[in-house]
Length: 100
Image (cartoon, rainbow, N blue to C red; front, side):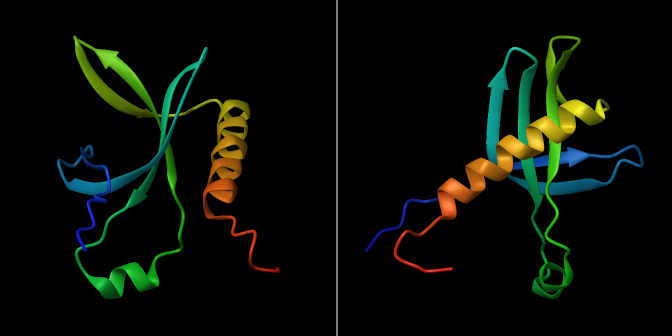
């Protein structure tokens, strides 16, 4: 059986020029912009086990004709986006055959 599923991966470079790999979990496009929910990808399995499970919400912006990602500074918008992403995650991973 051939499994064609491959995660959407992105590499971001921080202010110290260090690369960080993320999986794009979800995308929201609305009148306020385009936003990604990103989850860190770990090279070391031990790091993945010790991770807190937090994901990051980043805004897609265009700067000098290039697409870049930026932190969402507006706390109200961030809360709104988090609620939408969380709902998407619940719908995606909700198994109606399992009683919680």
